[in-house]
Image: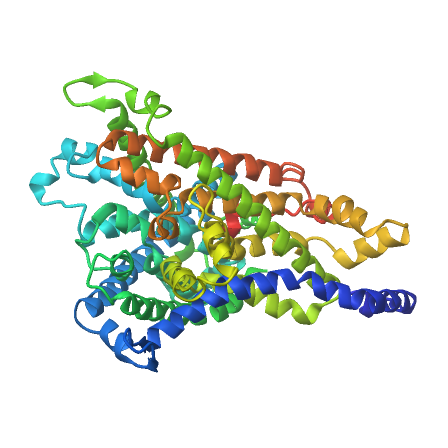
Length: 299
Length: 322
């Protein structure tokens, strides 16, 4: 590709080679395409197929139906979807604000050591989801947790195994994720812009309202949406922490899959899975263009 | 740019006897100490929120109220029922996943750079799509497919394959699922590495010097991708070691599932293992980021020097990409 745009002599050399190389390079990508088709496309197809069809156990006839999808949007299933969306939106919002504050503190301090420490810590903590995180918080804020005992939080009505508790735990991996996402964008805010605004007589608040926030907006929204997606998809933390006491769609799917509910609910689990993919797909459809847009300011 | 910032703010207060003299110094005098206060408060509170659970977890594992301090939770680990098996299973799964993911992604990405640029959006989409599908949705699809085995295929040779991939001692189906989940991270890491290398030129130069294709691959391209390969491998390792959803719902028992299964009877031990896994991940990441950045020059070095070296050492690895 690049050889085509360079000098003519190279072009002919590249042209010769490409004629021989053409079909073979194409083949090198084939295993990946075949693999994703088989191991990703097939389960997704099965999910979609099972979510919209019903097989009669007697006759074996398969008919198209919207019943499972309909049921996944009713009663406790709808409640779990709403619960998941609420929890994800709330935690993503808080984490966006706090992540930006921490990242801004790091950027303005201009200390390379602090910056490296925060980046490394964020890289680790953003991946510190799942089971270990749940247990760390049980040891800290659970019923017999160290902080709970020290500060007598139980007497104050604190309960880790609740919506609020789950939100506090989710923030632990969402804030570092936001720091990782937003730090490059904050770096992209040129100090000259601020100086220009100051020279024009703008206060700090005005600078942020008319320059800082508009420039950051795509990154902020993109970060929020990314956090929403990760909170929405999280299952292990919630499963290890609250079991079933908080209605979350991931927990409902796990229940239905492991047969903890009525027989024949598997298809509702598939329908719920489809609902989740639709929501997550929507999130990504917002995130990816935003990320491309914000990339403009980073270079 | 980082070098410009301090000079800009240092010179800013100096032009004193100029026109806009009266208001700015007063404003500056007020705004100057304030950032330091809020920065300290933000970093302090953030640090507390992120450190307290770690410290409290450690205290929880070593201190029993009324009994004093003991390190039993850590020493009893090795003898704990299922610890070694589940850890070895997870490590084996991680190794297989890393090998499979790299075997699939490296040739595809290099090929896309070399001679099939039109495939690039296809490959990118294939690798990034798993981000859209939550693991729990993926596992519902996988378990549906796996149920086809006994339901429809019991008389075909395919059935043996279905049984083989669900082998209890090494469930290969998990490797397949983990590879799908790892592809976005592997893709990003490798793509960042390849972006810093001019693959077509390197390959042409090597081929013109008479190098064979395997030589080009293993001695020219892969060494240039060392740190992004390491980044991809590390992220995959972290992902597999911590993965719970797919394994537990398919009924296997690697490390994360084991931790949950012992938490009822051995609360202290489960917290101890969680803490250890964090420390190990941290160590790996530190080692990785050092390996990724060490060959580049120091931060204060001129930009041109860094730029000249950057094709050899893809600078940005996992910390920013993850």
